[in-house]
Length: 252
Image (cartoon, rainbow, N blue to C red; front, side, top):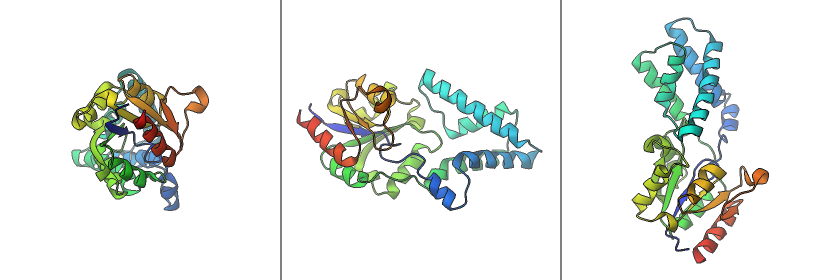
C-alpha cells in the first residue's frame, strides 16, 4: 500500500489503562472509581445530609446508561455532562464553583498520577514520526483530550503527533467515521493511505477497515483475538513487532 499516515489509539496501545491504580494504592489513595464517588458524596453532604449508598447506586446506574448509549450512538460525554446527569438522577444540585472543582478533580486524576507508557513506545513513535505523519484517534471518558495531551507531553511523545482526534472534542467516538476523518483531513491524506493501530476489534480494527484503512491489532496488554479471532490486517504484541509490521505493510 502507499502508506502516507499512521493513527494510534491511546488506551492499551500507547498507554496502559489503569496502570496508575497500583501507584495510587502505593500512595494510600482510593481507586479512581472510589475517589470519584467519595468526593461527590462529600460535596453533596456539605450541602445537605446525603446517604453514601445513594451516590454509589447512581454511579452504577449511570455507568450502565453511558455504556448502552455508546453502543447506540457512539458518543462519550464529557465530565461536566456526566456529573450533571449524576446530580439530576439524585435530584440534587451543587453551587457552580463546587461543580467546577469536582469536574477538575475528575479530569486531573490520571494527569496527576499518569498511567504507564508501553515499553518501546517512546522510541518507536519517534522513529515512525521520522517517516510518516502520525495522528491520535482515541476515545476519552474521564480524562479529556487536554489531559491526554499533557500525559503524552510528560512522556516526551506529544511532539510525535501532528493531529489529535479525541472523542470529547470531536463529539463522536470510534468507530464513527467523523473521528477518523478529522485526522485524515488534518494530515491531508485519504483513508486508503492510512493504517490505524489499536487494541479493540470493533472500535479500532473494524472501524478503520470500514473506511478503507488498514488496521493493526495491538495485543500487548489485552488480546481480543484470543477469544473471537481478528479481522485485522496484522497484529503486534509489542513495539518491536509493530515497527516490523508497519514496514511490511508500507512495502506491499
